[in-house]
Length: 292
Ligand code: RIB
Image (cartoon, rainbow, N blue to C red; front, side, top):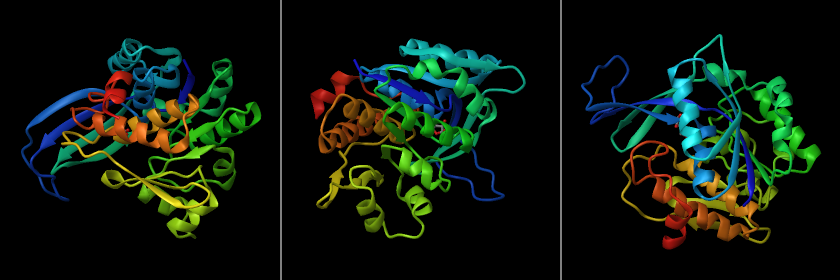
């Protein structure tokens, strides 16, 4: 069983479904409202655990009912929460999601996730012991991402950085990461002075650009490869990227070749969109392997 550490956000998703997405200044009548566990970090932790990894989450929640439910949900999914500590002076992170017209729009309030600080990481250093892979995203302070990237470089642990939501990345962080998985929009922001092909060639087998329903593109050292996605009937695409990242990390940590790891991750991500909620459709190992 591979050991994966996820440093990241753990939030509650407040989801409304509506036939129409409201424009600026417009009010529309929606269809439903639900609260479901989310946050990119927690989503990736849950997805990796369902795929059979031994997962420890490093994160923060608020001292509130959402915080309790977020932690219980991680436990139910066999994610270790020894390093998920409640903060007392602010609430849990929330994501405000509109599902409309076949896609989502999301506003994230980081709240307690802002307390995943470099100092907190230093207090959680034992968690990194014997890790096969560390995963991180960007719903928490920028300096934490830099700090974790330095720790991983020092300890020789591969770091998979999912640079979402988009923000420019320091060169040092790019160099410290073993794998980078931006979507097209994030890639444009990070590699603003290059074309996509130039960026891919600069980081062979390290930069993997996710292109939604088209698939995932990378440079294998010889040629550009597009690994096509699997076609499915999508119910809710929230969490598909998180499932991809988790499955990719698990496959790589297990020693699968790169192409095979992307295919495995594409399959897991495609299954994840067939049910409601970021974590609702995240598949088990068996579900992915039956279908690959
Ligand atoms: O990646 C999907 C996640 O992003 C949602 O669960 C929501 O919490 C947002 O942070």
